[in-house]
Image (cartoon, rainbow, N blue to C red):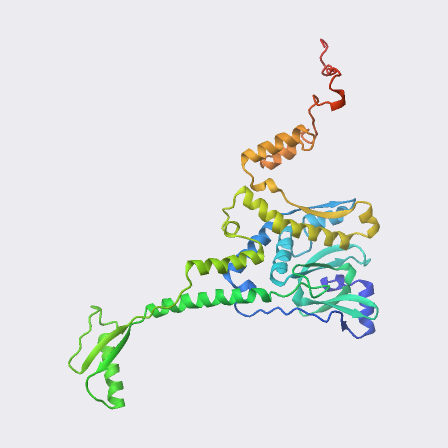
Amino acid sequence: MGILDSLFSKKAKDAAKVGQYWQMLSAYTPVFTSRFGGVYEMELTRAAIHAFATACAKLTPSVKGDNKRLETLVCHRPNILMDAYKFIYRLATILQVENTAFIIPAFALDGQTIIGLYPLSSLMAEVVRVGNGIYVRFSLSNGERGAIEYERVGILTKHQLKSDFYGDANNPLEPTLGLLDAQRQGMKEGIKNSANIRLLVNLSANLSPDDIKKERDRFIKENLSVSNNGGVIFGDNKYGEVKQIISRPYLIDAAQQKLIEDNVFNYFGVNSDILQNKFTEDVWSAFYEGAIEPFALQLSLVLTNMCFAPREVADGSGVVYSGSRLQYATNKSTVEFITQMFDRGMLTENEGRGLFGLPEIDNGNKFYIRREYAEISKLDEPVEKKPLEGNDDA
């Protein structure tokens, strides 16, 4: 059984064999262009997308419920082509570029057990209706096509307004992309122009067009060729004036450049500190809450609904992606957090060591709590002191 076969459930195969008319379900279909200078082809926008995808790829997946196969799948190797890091990075990148990303499951021979999860570009998938059923029809990179029931597919979106299934296109970003492209071309042409010597030569004599061309070629050959390494130009009385034309290309100033960058940062929810890896604890916390946590929540819900039946979800089963906000905290903040959480029985010793990147120790997974706390209504009662185990003198 190949990858393509595993991507079809039995119901989808039967629907495809009938040869029914595939009707587009949504009248609105976003258009994504891949022109030069597109969202992923500009240096600044690609850096913003990369920063977001890299942070998302470090999220920690976990599976609630007794399903070891799915736990291995989600936490380590979602499919035969990708590990968990590459899977999330690819999914986050597609979502940022296209505002819609699909997750297609692969099934075992029983047509029910999920054995793979594949991220798929929205350019390669479409939501269609076959009879009374809703399906996702998709194309693979090798040109083969498949279909699967809509309820078995995961769809992540952002900027979703016009369609029930797709996020809107990145049209609002087009003016900023145009400015970025114009600025880049302007700098390139400015460098080229600065390397050229342009002269305005006024001939004092009236010459025919052919004589003017011959004189121009002679002047260039004798004065502007590489053989003139002295940089001095001589002329006789046939030249009334020789004047250099200085080209000064227009470049966007610092304030305008910052405005363009801020437009990109606002659109993707990042800033220069995140892109250049010089963020502080507070900057990272804001970036996590504003950009990474919403992605983690959506991905958790999408995979939970894909991989578990409603009854299993009601019983507490699910897929959860989480990240540590203390990953980039200062040592002082981390110590304070561990001290407070450990004393209150909310953090084990090994979990505290993990926040500092230290290995686990034996018997380090126990929870402790301070025992001198008392209820407000019992403050007048004496504290009962119990002897420590093994202390015969107590």
